[in-house]
Length: 137
Image (tube, rainbow, N blue to C red; front, side, top):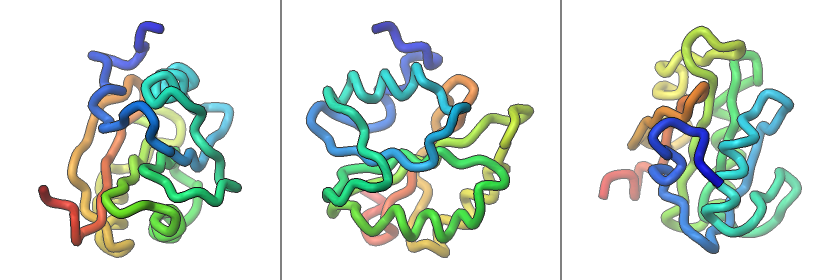
């Protein structure tokens, strides 16, 4: 499958074959091509919010009006393995559900996370968040 994300950015998400990834916030507006690219990369399906496994990473689709981002991040941290990380994926400027990047940047430290990277994912933007204890490598 050819990546539909600009410049193949799915490869910049830090995922690898065999990783266990939980997907939260899926809805009809999520980028199905990006989702398929991630699942191709990890060679498995992403797990939903009912999964009880230990996760290597979480993909959190987040839109304006989805609720309290800090609460969602705290919930997402729970099943993460040591060294795990969260990608907050939100619509870009001008798209329905746009989230101001400052909202993510302000929510991260409150949840005990640091924003370490931002990538362009077509109509979406991804913000990588890691535990502040392991955020800088």
